[in-house]
Image (cartoon, rainbow, N blue to C red):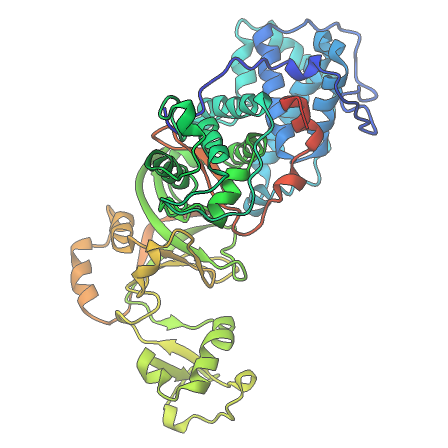
Length: 514
């Protein structure tokens, strides 16, 4: 099964039995809070409850979201006797319960950027009593399981996460030198590359003989394995081992596990979202999806903002669709991009079908333009007329937000063929914009059969949505797709420093080596 990490019998208490390192956390992470009743003796939960609580703690500790999780996990690692203390599991339960409540209350930007600075978990007599009652139920497992991310593919992601950690325990990840290898080339590093592809699941076992595994020629089977690897990482599947492919080949499974753990947490969306239709734009994936009651009903490639002009993390809604939009050029794009072109080319306005607009909103004849030619003193605004030449294309999907960001089509569809599509000035360009518009307008008050006639004209039409559709931009770098393939994407906006964000001691406790 190529590219798949199969479930393994990873023991959840493995780190508890290891004393290979000592960590001073600076405080007792799971100590009792003052003032709460400890007179009632709590029962030791069942093995399944203990395992579930421990697993959830481990997953969150891996993400680096808050030091209390790492501290708690490491304390358990260093003090194995805590595994038999009933108080341990109450405190873990309380920690997880409070965290999920805080997590679902976070604003959208804080969720994606892991800004959880005000989290102050505590225990109480009331909470202790509720936990004691929970354990007396006939099915305490169901209540504990509700603390998990409530996503359909969560258990699949969990199995993959454990498999990555299992793989990382087998041996240190091989090192690779700087290189560039094309199909048919020879390179001394190819035996190491094959070993990596075998361990990642992209090169099937027994595809090559032991002798072929050691060849320094870049053979067809290895090229195919590299192409499969590239597809799983959102790269151009050309078989060329260049800089971006090399960076991913070098990445050890324990770091991949951290990336996946963060994506598992980010994808734990508020439950009220699952009952309605919404639009999800995954920025690192360069893809837009429409989901209706958790089912994907539409998907399209997108172009997102450049590194210096990032598409923001936002939560909004499409309130209107503008057919044949005019483009009112934002001031930042005007000054940085268009005014320099205008200064060099006196025909620039005519070529792009731009209109000059003064501070009063009045159109100005270019022949009457008063300007000294310096870029910083340009006194006008620019408005591009509707049509096929327009940078917004034929559709603008308007969503209220403080960043003046919206979704739109484009007059330059060729850019969608690129694998790295962080190219815009912040807005999201949608490749299948026409199908997207028709889907959103379906069952609305607008007759979508009239769209074709509107598109033949250059008159701007505002179509207000009867029921605005929520839009969310997210930053998910890893997931298991419908085919069971583990996917990864580049950290295009440098949200995450994998070495810095992950707690090294936590990872070492799980993989058994540094």
